[in-house]
Length: 265
Ligand SMILES: [Zn+2]
Image 1 (cartoon, helix red, strand yellow):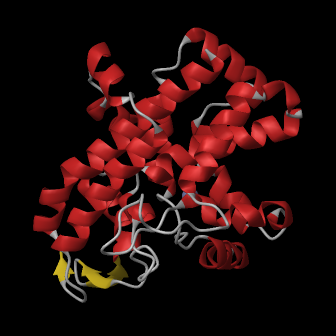
Image 2 (tube, helix red, strand yellow):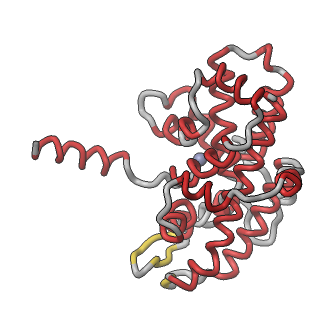
């Protein structure tokens, strides 16, 4: 039994650390849980056929897992840069030079175009891959540190303290803040946030992925203005930013649902 626990602990230490380029699992689960509640019947039926009846939540972090898995890595190396879009100080998403290896905006546009306009040309395995990627990337695009600066690798090199524990700005926004502001399950997050009217849903889910990226970037700029390297943050930061985390997760969920309804509905 002791040996079994040691093996489990080792597995956790090796693979359980937070990925540096993703909302944590919780964030993605919340986004997909919200989206799931707003799928049309027809979209759900078509998604069931592709996802073999599995929920959006089931695949919410698949894209992070696949790129970090030694067994699956080869075919997915090209997707490593697809989770983020760096914008340095003094630039905007429009003036910053794009990563030639791809970014979250080019990836999302490619996935949407392929699934929406060229679905007949895709094999079943490519179709499910593209869908699982889209499910994940709509979430990532709304995570502020995924539109962070190249100079500090999206906040990964901006070291701060969170309740006196060493961390960095990226990790804070990927998971520590979500885990701190509410100790809810993803369904409780959905139940507590998801109260918009149909008109509000329509307004939030309007626009293009580029518009959504610009919105996230503005949030990110505010976060950089607020933070000072090596500073300790705790309750005040949580109070100030809880509504922002909640907003980003909610709008990501609505936009994912609207996209899937448009493509598969
Ligand atoms: Zn990611």
